[in-house]
Length: 116
Image (spheres, rainbow, N blue to C red):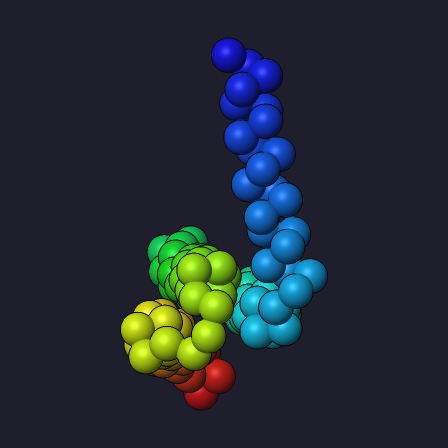
C-alpha cells in the first residue's frame, strides 16, 4: 500500500517536472509566483492575505497544468487539424487567461494598499 502511494506521488512529480521542462508559460507562472510570494512576505502581508495569494497562485498553476493536459490529449487523438481539438485548446487557454486575470486583480487588491 505504501509503495503504491509512493509510486503515485512519483508519477505526479514526473508530470509536474514534464510541464516545467516543456512549457515556457508554466515556468513564467512559477517565476511570477515566486516573485509575488517574496514580495508578499517583504511587504508583510497578513497570514490571511498570504493565504489568499497562495490559493490564487495555485488556481493559476492548476489551470496551466489542465491546459497542458488538454493540449496533450488533443494532440494525441487528432492526426490532422480539427475544429473540435482547436475549440478544446482555445477553451482551456481561456481558462488560464481568466485565472491569470483573477490573479492580477487579487495581487492589485493585496499589494496596492501596502505600497501607498
